[in-house]
Length: 122
Image (cartoon, rainbow, N blue to C red; front, side, top):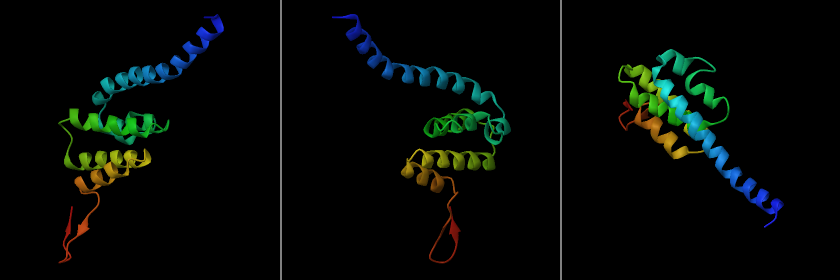
């Protein structure tokens, strides 16, 4: 096999391997450090926490980071959890995972549904 053919094969393999490797390495680093951020740094500040990832257009990864943060942080109050879940729902929607987004909104009371007697329930 000639050098050109081998090089082309290697380049085709690298087209698949490098993005996966990048996501694995970068995502792993983010996930280790993000739970250490306080709520305001993780959720409220542009360029920090999940927003840093979302600003690059990686919406599904941002949603996963929010999910991991919620899972690891047991010190969050109810309003913080609702807010984080709302943002996760937004990220799932932006990633075209509409079913998960809607489920997330309903699950955490972001969308309130009126009952037949007019009472609004989460």
